[in-house]
Image 1: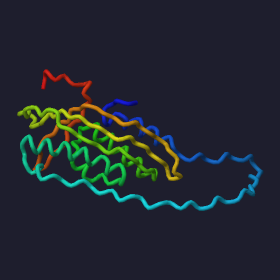
Image 2 (image 1 turned 180 degrees about the horizontal axis):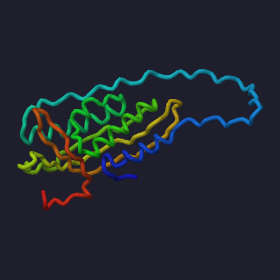
Image 3 (image 1 turned 135 degrees about the horizontal axis):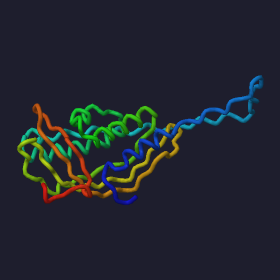
Image 4 (image 1 turned 135 degrees about the vertical axis):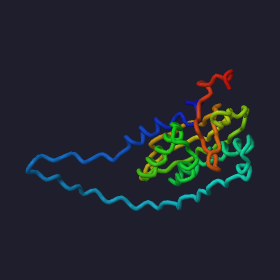
Length: 201
């Protein structure tokens, strides 16, 4: 698909990865022995070293507990996605994810699945633009922020180098809800633009 919400493919990728397992050998009949093949062993393939993925730097603007800090936190959180997917380092993503943020949880599970399978995540670099930041909701302390996200094409390969998933470039609008709790920024929700009613913001 050419347009979708930024994290909309997470569940699909997780399902695809779950199905990408090595096939078990067919069982032999009782009392028989499988015949050995005489095919030559494949020559070892030299693999190039994996590129170093540098963790994004926490912006100084996140020290502000107002709207500027909320905007910086939203952009920083999304910048963690690429690093998490490629390295399996989920610590900062987890620390910034509210327990009720289902999108955050699904993306976290996907990153863990990729790491557990020994797969590799390629591409997926994001460019985030702040479109509009609404007034803070006083009862909850949440800053609703509308953003535009552009994501580079994604491919996932298994340990043999075979492609198990691919996704075209994505351009989407979303709303990300951010709040400041216990001296740190937390992502409460990420919602696709198609689910929004901007008159209520």
